[in-house]
Amino acid sequence: MDSRLNQIADHYGLSAQLDILQEECAELIQAVSKFRRTQNSDIVEEIADVYIMLNQVVYLLNKNVETVDVEEFVACWMEKKIRRQLERINADTVIANPQNEGEWKEDAFNIICPFCGMTIDDEVRYLYPDNFDLNFCPNCGKKLRWKGGEE
Image 1 (cartoon, rainbow, N blue to C red):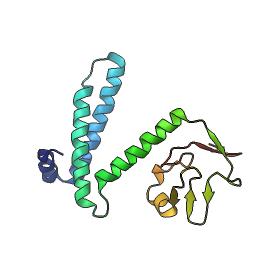
Image 2: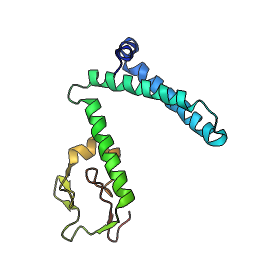
Image 3: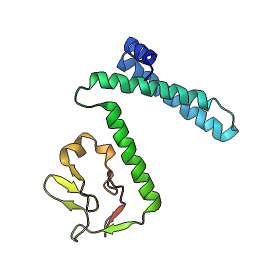
């Protein structure tokens, strides 16, 4: 990241930069709406503002969270989400039934993907509940529908 952005981030701190990030995201939303209506907006400038603030917030989070490399963690989530979306586009729906072999396996503490074997433990699901849509494996992106259940 540009060292000038680090200097700015250090000057204002995490709380202030989170507020500014939120404001910049709102401005980008408005620019996108205007672009859809008129094909004429400051969308590129607002994208730049959001990029700048995201870089600062990631830098500040890395300074404040000792146990996780936030940039690496974000890159990992991006990879998983990209892979999952591509699988959604390309893959057929697999109908799963928890009583049959080859479908979601569950023990007392974990859910195990039947396709790639990824284990999602209760602690991770508790810490990051919004990141786990159990109709899709976050690792391999396979789409599942529980037989007789709701998607």
